[in-house]
Image 1 (cartoon, helix red, strand yellow):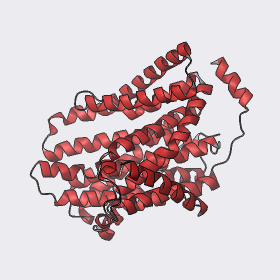
Image 2 (spheres, rainbow, N blue to C red):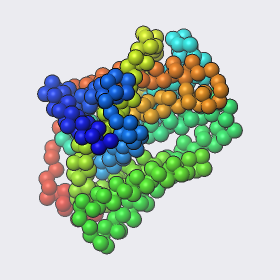
Image 3 (cartoon, rainbow, N blue to C red):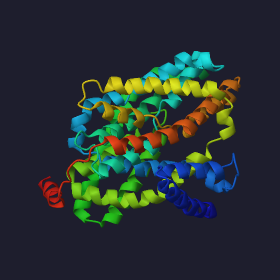
Image 4 (cartoon, rainbow, N blue to C red):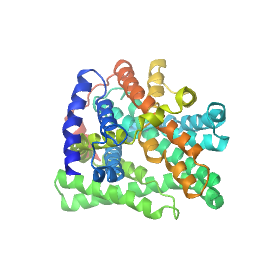
Length: 414
């Protein structure tokens, strides 16, 4: 496993450099590296490395969402509160519902099977979107209207809602629907408990830091460790009590920024260094999950269905932004920011197939669902990343920098 990690670090850095020289997002190079080294192409990764894939990817996601919370200022969130809320569910529900409706016309699936596929695909990828939004926030691009903050906050909620709806549909399909209503009711409960727990833990951590005053590196390690425990707590509570751990992670970062801005920037800076390693692991391992031959097995029909879903999602973004102060170009940026799929599709694309195998059911629909989920990664991750970079650099206006003295004064006043 150590050899595979060394390979991914060195080659990942090289691919990142090459793609940036080509004026393309570096993550595309890392995804391509994972595809080539993965078990479906040259199979050059050690089995132990692939077995640890899920844990490594979740740790990378924790780093992403912690940084997101530490950049999610209340002032910026207040500007986009309603739009961020609408963006968290309207586009995803429109995309998932469209695929559920049109699926049987494109693929050999029933409406219920198409609905499961729709809400697998409906989850936007925080792995692609959040780091790019953080880059814009750090350069204060679009900061005056809080556009990157809006997209970043909504993308995380979007995932929670899509995954819970998918779980409900899977319960109907496999006949384990006796707790479906409880799962449906769990959507708002999981969001509220996740945010509440994160705010409380962030507040307690601030008290701890004020009392013992550890160095920034140790603060960062404590915050990361607590965040990993939150994700483990969600796994322990699975099926018992709804809890959105990744929202709790974001909320922890948010309250640290709200109460101790200087400390939040220190921790975010440390996490930025860790992200260099974590990003290679995340995108390479997501790429390693992609079976190109399986993706193409659905042909133009699968691609056509994905495009129909993206059109519906784009319409949902525009509906959510009605009444916002964004210009037409800025709204288009929000639209393309909601295109990339990667992390969730790699994580749960095979779940229906495994459920069908476990239940002794016909598995052909599960293979189709997995193939289209994989194709959604192949098609939308590169397209979305390129579109976000290209449109964002052209459309987002840089806001004036706040002086460090002013930031320190603000931190002390809090």
